[in-house]
Image (cartoon, rainbow, N blue to C red; front, side, top):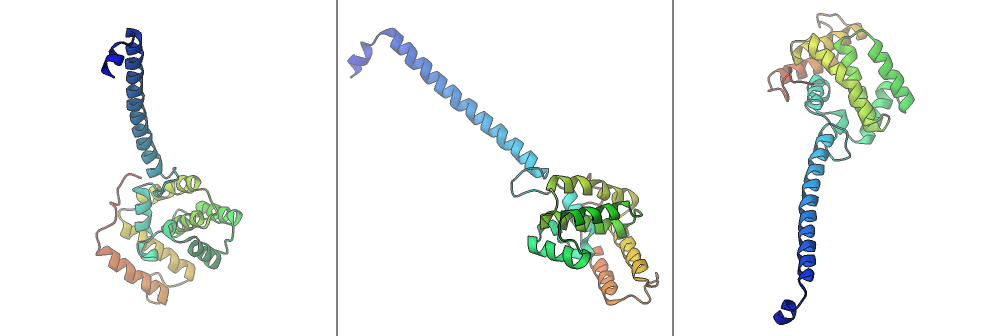
Length: 208
């Protein structure tokens, strides 16, 4: 066998070595390309633009969780089931599809820039995506400036929560001093006190 190999013409050896070198080079190049593609996919997915399991940009998503914490106990409507999101939108907002969602978001977005209006907009938008009524990229692009505006106008999450509570009292025609708070408002006051004592899930001044 060795004698047969040695008897082969020199150009057979050249062709064999060249083919082997090309194969190794292709394998190395393919490995590098795959690595780059995987890293790029991770970046896109983390930004909320990919199809992977992580679809929510951070720290924006967690910041919104904190802004809505006394209402949703630190949970996110973007992480609820589709049925839960649809039920909330139907029961609380009479929203049963994309056009009604768009109309609600436009109304909230054009209302006075208070936490009462803006926190509600954030919750409706996240639930709207989870319910299947709005594209995820459009949803995150819409809520980002709202969260940034809240962040610029307030000094802390507590400030956001208290302004939301004041807005609810005004809407429900309750005394602003809380002397006649209904059960729902009392529960939210209690939640605010609880969340004040916990370390925040994200820094209030985090870059959004």
